[in-house]
Amino acid sequence: MPPIPDSRPPRFDDPALTRLRAILGARPAIEIDAPKLKRAAVLIPLIPQEDGWSLLFSRRSKNLAAHSGQIAFPGGGVEEGEPLEAAAVREAHEEVGIASERVELIGRLDDLITNSGFLVAPFVGVVDQRIDYVLQATEVDEVFEVPIEALLRPDQPEVNYVAFRSKRYPAYFYRYEQHEIWGLTGRILKHFLDFVWRAV
Image (tube, rainbow, N blue to C red; front, side, top):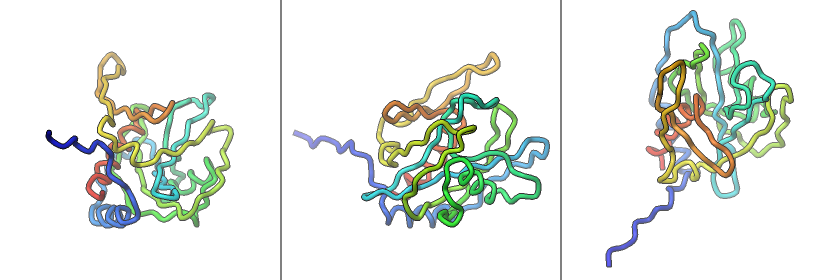
């Protein structure tokens, strides 16, 4: 009888994180030149666990004018003259209470354009210790962590087509417990996990 294939996802441990640092450090991010678009930056926070690493996500407040109630990485608009990486770290501090001195940026992913007209720069940051999150109530309703292994399962992501302005577009859907991660965050997450797969 042939052996049953191992369906367990690979482990993302400290050696894998070291390899991810090298992978991200060796490649320049693709930067889009679109000066008419509004600039934004997000942080992809890697949070230490007892036996591995998780990613931090937030759910945006239902009272926001744009992207209300959606799951996102901490982030927001870039202030005039502000470096993109500084904006990502600042927004994470303001939205969920991650102090800047707790974050080590290890790489930048490619720019993305949102349907709402933002040009977004995602940054990967390692948080050096667990913290008590402090939410900015006007912008964030909740935060939650997802073990990276849960996002590397064989059934992740699911690709579905969604309608936008009378057209249909493919979108990545990641699911964890009661949470459904898709849209811009799903696109950023897929891009990030493509590098994680090379590191595990």
